[in-house]
Length: 123
Image (cartoon, rainbow, N blue to C red; front, side):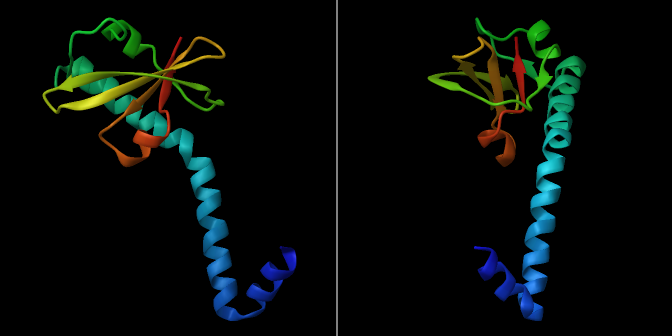
């Protein structure tokens, strides 16, 4: 593996591609928490200002959503998923229960990143 990497960076084009790939992985690794934080801040500020309203449900309340914490831990999702629609945008807050520590992981369907990565958790 290292030999292939070395052969690739010997050429100028290969070095440029390898550098860009390494740099983008570095940026992605360190910007994940910042991105989750900005999405959480957007959801909370929109709910507080009244631009978004949670649909009636049994799992998520306004008090719970204000206490969302950033997700930077290992996730162990169960197969059961709950969806809470945020009105008027009709986006979903998708909630999956963690079977190892009884937390609920929150996903947001508005952004592509937050559909596949948990943006926060509720204890």
